[in-house]
Image (cartoon, rainbow, N blue to C red; front, side):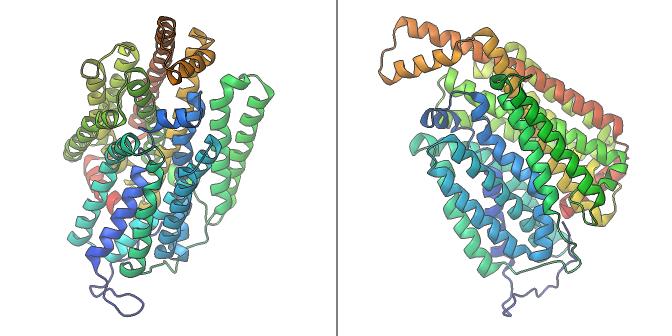
Length: 517
């Protein structure tokens, strides 16, 4: 992604109209909010989706989340390059239109396959919109206080979007239908397109190189094959021809991706950046952080609603303290960065978050309470993540040339998204295997329970069956949390071992990351 020079004060549209910067920012911010909240808005609706579409496997259900994060992360770098070359406003609007079409398809989906395909298209739409929107912001607002203020609004929306998604998803699911967590994007996309036509100027980088479509297709296809192998491993058998064939396909596609990147004059991922130990450490750390942390929402939402009977709204609100504490910890981390540097934060942050996951893995049960078990764990996780994100962001861009700051920051974001998709698949596969080892007939039991609830025949025998299913499910999720804690600890070890950034460079790089994203 290219960051242009500061624009002139009298920035105008092609027809001579003066650009209204405030309204342009509103349009860009609305679109970014849609992209960010869609990463979490469906989480609260997952139990309703499973019931409506007859999804009995948590592994299959996880694709509703994974399809979005995987395509978003896989095409994010390509989206920025396309926007620079073709035109940022055009790509921004094209992404919004694709997002709206995908939302319609998902909202009317009558089966899981169509819903997952729609979520994947949403991810591609978001990967086109988000980098184009941020580049437009740097074009419209002059470098300095004006741009910093606009970036502050952008950052606040990005940070708060996850919480808004959980709350809005809960409200729409409880008072309308799970389908509205997708339909709600349609009017937002319309506002984004109409607003962009009227208030956002076109911009492109005449120096932009060609973009690497084969690279994006290969890496996303390889990751999807790998995720599918992990999700279906328990069902197919880990030594079966299907599973091994999928893993082999993933290896071939990812190897082809690496070969294409090494030979391409304009690679999607410039491997030369990884010669910088700090960039490599930050990106690997981000990958493992995403792998360990994304499953929290998935597992806890299911625990809250399927096991403890939380309403969708209550489940969404339950994560608000976590979101608030991440913001507080990020502010503390930013202040500490210039005093102690990133390495202490990259040690303490992942260990605190791993401690929260360890607490959940050891203490979570069907009878656990929100205040006694969930809230303390979320507090540790949130504070650790707030410290970690600040340190990773600064380390990812410290020491790279100014012209590479944008791609370095985007690599960090893409790594977290891809890591989240892979981690959710891995942790879901492990938790499912644990659950099925404890209760091999859980699929049959689940069908019996659903029928009993539908016919209102809740006998004592059915009650006992529900208790057995809940025990097995929670035990499986607990194992997932324990492995998530290990992944976070690995992230801390990798980042702390490789990152070599002074406190002065880290503080300067944190500002650079915001301006060069």
